[in-house]
Image (cartoon, rainbow over all chains, first blue to last red; front, side, top):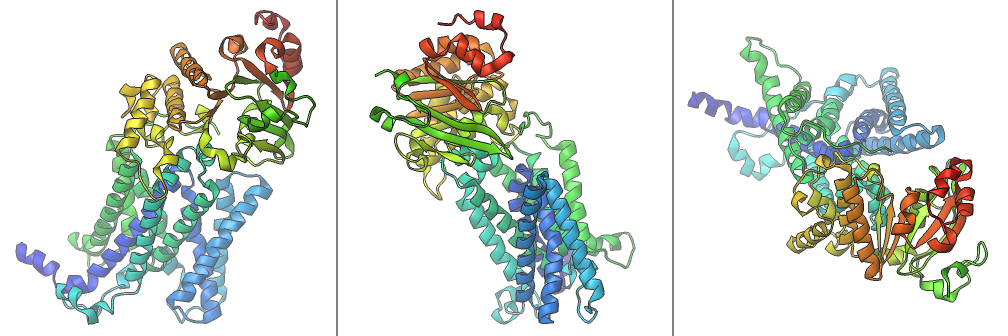
Length: 316
Length: 266
C-alpha cells in the first residue's frame, strides 16, 4: 500500500501529473479570487462573458500571426475582452437594458463569431479548435524533462516547465496583490457603492480594475485549461464559500480552499477515476474539475452553515 | 441675520455669511434618462441647524442629497461644502444612504460595517487595526448596539440595521451629517434612539440634514425644512416655512386638508 503510493507519487507522477495539477490549481485560484467580488456585486456573469469572448480574439491573433505562440494569443484575447466590456457598456446604455442582458447578448454573439472564424479559416494545421477552447489541454501540459521530485531543484529541468505555469503564477500573484492592497476599497464599494463614493473611493475605476483583473485571470487560465474551468471557477468556489461563513475575509479563504480541492480532486478523478471502475480510458480533466466544483457547491447548499439567506436584498 | 434671508432670490446666494455654510447649492439639476429628478434647486444649510428635506415620493429628495455629494452625476449646478468643493471637504461630511439601498445579505458583521466609517483614518494599503475596533465599539455604544457587534448584519431588524448605519456615520466623526430616510421602516425605540443621537450631534454644534417622510414629527425633531418637489418650493425655519400653504404647494392634491390640520402648523 505504502509502496504503491510512493510509486504513484514517483517520477512518473512528477513528469505527467504534477504540472497539470499545479497549473489547474493556480488557474482555479486566480479565477476564484476576483469571483468572490463579482458574485457579491451580482456580476458573476461577466466572468462567463469574458471567458467566451477570448475565443474570437485568439482566433484573430492566430490569423494575423499564423502561429500559436503565447504573446500574440494573450494580446488577442485581452483585446477581445476589452472590446467586449466596451460593447456591453454600449448595449447597456443605448438599449437601456439590465447588465445581464447586455452581457448575454455580447458574449454569445462574440463566441459564435469565434466559432465561425474557426470553421471558415484554415486552422486545421494547428491545435486550435472548439474542443480546445472549451476544455483546454490540461493533460498535455506535462513536464518532459522531469525525472522525479529532485527535478524541482534542478535549474535545467525547471527551465523546461510548461510556460503556462510561471505565467499563471505571475497572474495569481498580481491578482492577490490587487485584492490585498485594495481590500478596504473593494469591500466597502461592494457593500455600499453610494457610501464608498461619498468617502472618496473611486468606485467606477475600482469596478473597472476588478473587471480587468477578471479578464487577466480568464485569459491566462483559458490558455491552459479552457473556458469551462474558467466559468466554473469564477462562480462555484465563491458561491460555496459564501455558504460557509458570514465574513468576507473568511469567504475568500474558503473559496481558495474549494478551488484547490476542485483542481486537485478533479484532476485525480479524471486521470485515475475511470481506472477504478475498470475502464482503460481517462476523462477530461477540465470537465472533471468543473464537475467537482459543482458537487462542492451542491454539498455547501445542503450542509453549509450559512445556507439560509437572512438579509433583505437591496431594492435597487 | 435670519436664515430665510440667505436665499433672497432664486439662483443667487447673496449672503457672505453663508460662504462657509455646511452646504450651499445653486441650480442643482440631476436627471435620470430624459426626465429631471431634481431641477435647478437652490439651498443653503446653516451651521448647527437640523434640517428636514420634505416632499412627496419621487420628488427628488434622495437625488438632491446624492447630487449634492456627487454620488450621482450632476447635469448642472454648483455645490459648496463648507465653502469648498466636496472633494476637498470630504472628511468633514458623513453620508448615510437609504438602508434599502444595500444588500444586507453581504458577508459582514455589525462591527465590519461600522469600521467602514473609519475608512478615511486607516490609510492607503492598510487594514483596520485594534484602535479602530475600539473606536467602532464606542460608536456602537452610542446607538445601543454594542451587544450586536459580532452579529451578521442580515440577522438584524430594520431598526437595528439603521442604527448600524448611524454608528458607521458617527465613526466618521464629521461636522455635517446627511441622512437619507433614517426613520423609514424602523421601530419606535430605534426612532427615539436615532433622534436623541442626532440631537446630541446638534448640541455639539454639528449640522444635520435628513430626508424625512413623517410630517407629524417635523416640528418636534427639526428646526429647519427644505421643501422639494423636483424644484425647490421653500426653505427656512420650521416656524415660518413649514406652513399649510407651502405644504399644499409641495404635495399638490396628494395631501388632504384634514391631514394638514393635524400637523399643528404655525
